Image (cartoon, rainbow, N blue to C red; front, side):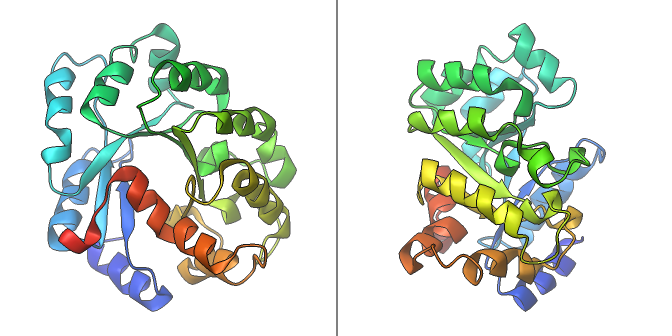
Length: 250
């Protein structure tokens, strides 16, 4: 999508705002994301990335949240080099530094829930977000139950009040048609464990088998157990609070 195309589709689907995540396959993704944020403040924000092996990253972290629309950091720790960096300790300086700077960190970390457990325990002031229901998102072809074998290990992280889960891209894990009942059952498990203030809706829209609107109505119309107040939190208010996005001020 271009920013203009995304805004048009968001308007059509009734989506107020979106947080852009950087991708490794596009060397210009940071510039594209920053331009979208600048053009549509309050509609777009972004999560940035700092290579933990780059000596300049420590200085950049201190001013990261001063950049317009930047809400925190995100890493794909199910692929290289991030996975190796995590296991080799290259991120070890980042956890306390981000905690001190108030910088939230989101991640795909399907293979490393035990390590995330320890990080959350040692750094209780660091807001961590597990992406894609804890799975591999668009990096897997597994569907339904086969894609969710990590769920028990991830649900155990709910004991840490500084860990949240984005239930992003649930339809992409499904071999069923809308409204994806098997994936609804996993959304319910996550919600029951983490609660409405730590369960965040999202789409990963470019990889979904359904429309942007259906990604939303799967939650707003197909989950009768989700109360109106909880729906408001899950569909945006909670993640804005977690990542400190004051859209009204932009």
